[in-house]
Length: 192
Ligand SMILES: *Cc1c(COP(=O)(O)O)cnc(C)c1O
Image (cartoon, rainbow, N blue to C red; front, side):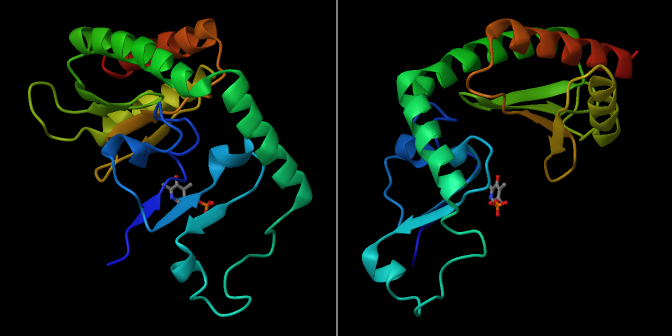
């Protein structure tokens, strides 16, 4: 059995380790990376055991934009920045702020059924108050109100009732708090 870790969203310091699988003490056979690898420029990678990587026929692993020099330079810059600014540790600081603020919102907004995640990757689940029944309509209304107030959030989850927050690891604290203020007001507005 081949174990593939999709670290496209969780990789590059997002979860308070360079890669999320480090928290689980496992060594994947293949690791897929993208997104944070180049700070937003289009770059993706597949890293793995030599016998797996070499099993592909010549030219069988790649893409139209593979090895783009500008994206590769951005990738090196992103990795330097992660090191220089200590962003692996900063992800943990962001978690502290996110969890404290979101748990406080949870005490005031009974539509918040759960707050979960790891480091700078935190999700808020919306439910019918007092139940675990998904409230996708409220979640959508919150996202729409936040968007109207200038904060773009993504809804996700099997039932479309979850908002996930993955702020930039370099976000200033005041901006994160401002974004959370908007979210707080959006929830109040959507449930009034
Ligand atoms: C964004 C994302 C993908 C898709 O990545 P592409 O580089 O756009 O193909 C796959 N898996 C996860 C977990 C993602 O977040």
